[in-house]
Image 1: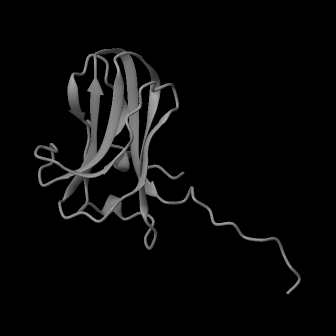
Image 2: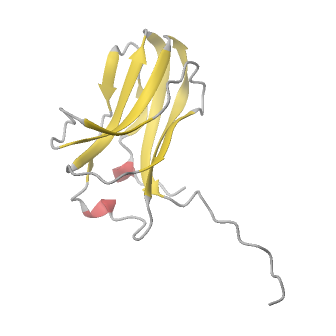
Length: 140
């Protein structure tokens, strides 16, 4: 997977003590030249637990868009499933980035209960992890 610091809205962002809904610490400005990755390929949005979660009940990750750089008044583009046991390395969201109509995108984390530990990292990257199957040389 190719990653870029400009396309990483959350880097080990702690959700400990977070109540209800938290947005990613950074946003991606779709008018920035650094978002021109994977030309001709779909982009993927993914989020992973980078620290095991302790306490709390569940976590859900959404890919969001907003007209504002602080991701206020967001629209949800894609949602992950509700995860009740987010362990280290657990994939919380992995989707192709759908078409959007607003300038900024980022992630929204919804927690139920209060976690005493737990962090998440999120990425937007070129869809390079899904390699097509190519058969071996058949002699033709």
